[in-house]
Image (tube, helix red, strand yellow):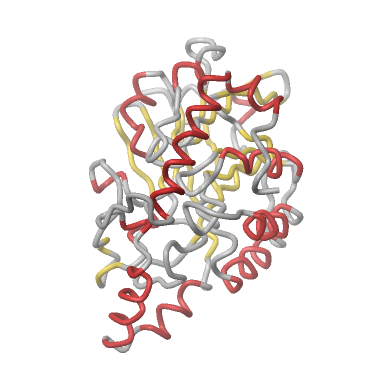
Length: 316
């Protein structure tokens, strides 16, 4: 499955330039990761960083605790209040899963499956990073995602992250996940509608096109943008989106006491890197993710899945 070319239907959706440009970037990245021009400072591709993280945690006596924490996924509740929300969508619930890295931590995925059994929602959204590594095979990741998706109530929408290959899209859609690749869909309820848009990865691949995703959304109608990274907050606000749901940062994953991230691996104000935030009229939420990157460890940053509830706020 991993070696097949891009699906013809996918190329038609994306346009040949987007599809082949993304594949070219993926190929170049994999070549560097396998020793052809490897950048010493590319942390995602630096093999020894895994042993450095493990060794450092062991020396501090924190490794076992950090490993346990990676599996302690919790369900968080968050309310999004929007003054222009159609009344029919008051109380509408979105289940938000991000950064599953489904082939990295069996304990985390088992906990996610357990949590899903007790959650009621109207739509589920996945904001990318289904694979543990940024290169190589992805069959194990799709198998892990399949286990989670089997417990989800449809509809389920998703976007790609910087760990994901464009070649994963047919497999994800075969599982019942409607992938939004610079695309949008209207969601109707009792004669009213809102819009759900999603963009391709804007962190590493820079394959996002917010203008294209928003093109079919009428001005003034409530629109929610799914992006793997919150780094597009300015573009999202300028495009008129009411909500931005993202992940990518892992909340720092390894944090100082009090949850202070050491790094967020993102070019944005730190206040946009974890949880709820606002930028002008844009309401944002950055999930710390359900999985872990590089090594399945967490400190002072519990993994999460998030249940967002939309409410119509009184007009100011």
